Image (cartoon, rainbow, N blue to C red):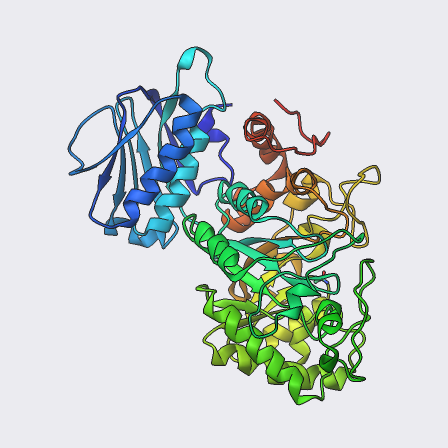
Length: 487
Ligand code: ACM
């Protein structure tokens, strides 16, 4: 299959030309424009294709008229109709020109350039086939979630995960930072959250947490890849780690024990105490101050230990705390049972009724149906990692669905985008992450990027097959599904 036919996510428009542009040791990356972001975009491209090809790509500013033999990166207002993440790419026998209205568009286009190069090249023939591409995403929110609470993952693991999702043009990483089994973010005004609540994880190992500096480092690393971090503090349920750290957050003023199992639905903050809202205010204030992105996720799922009326009272009090600190609330679909702040976003995962209620209340929805998008669901009954309470999700099933017709009554206009969560009850190592996430994530990235009418599994599976060598070259320990004739 020719490289332009194998791009994931599938671009909006691809016109193949004849010939190819051969990279050499003399190829320069030429930046056309004065915007400071161009230099780091060029470094990103050189940092990917330099080690791949063995060439040392020099980066220089130019006018765009330096002629053949070069790769041009250009911010160009003429591409504004392609939006903030759209780009055009023109490759002929002599040069490659990437143009976008915004730096994020150039970053997405760079991923296309990388995919147009072979995963390895016999005899050092590193050529980009002649092609014209015009491309932009269907949805503005295309993300994955990493549960760093059930098992803790290092800053290095999170950065690797960011790189892996960036290659498929995702633009959000949601970090599930707190749950019954662990509190993973330093909160200076409540230090025992990490001292006690961060000291364990599922299975009883030592857990861990991110200092505020480490979290900022993750945020910056993501931002350089035009990825927004969405931090989640799950509440009022899924809070045992906090309840074990501070007795006063419990209605009976007694700290709970550290929890290392995998049950859900047994914990709740004490909804009727003032200290609960002081606690939440402090946590959200510190979190908002280190989160440049627009969203703070307040969880709200499976609060089975909270009375229904208490849940509504609680969510009605917590949402304004988030908006007071300048952030937009995101919550799991149960939050639709509360009065929603004007901009609150509801993340559909299980309950279609909740999600319909959200839409009727005017909320936008993130589509994360557990039966399609949950990356911790096993591929089939032989998968050794993961769970299957929602479904077994083979690679074709994760791909073959349309967010805009999945729930009757929720259509394109109601949908902010899609997110593929990885819960980590059974996920311990980076290899475990990779095995569950790949090769489903590229397909889910395409669900978010490419219009449903331009997608079908039989065509996609042939494209995905060509990404086997790419994943191998990146050291990605993927599940070799029998549904795909791997190259
Ligand atoms: C969830 O899976 N409890 C959101």
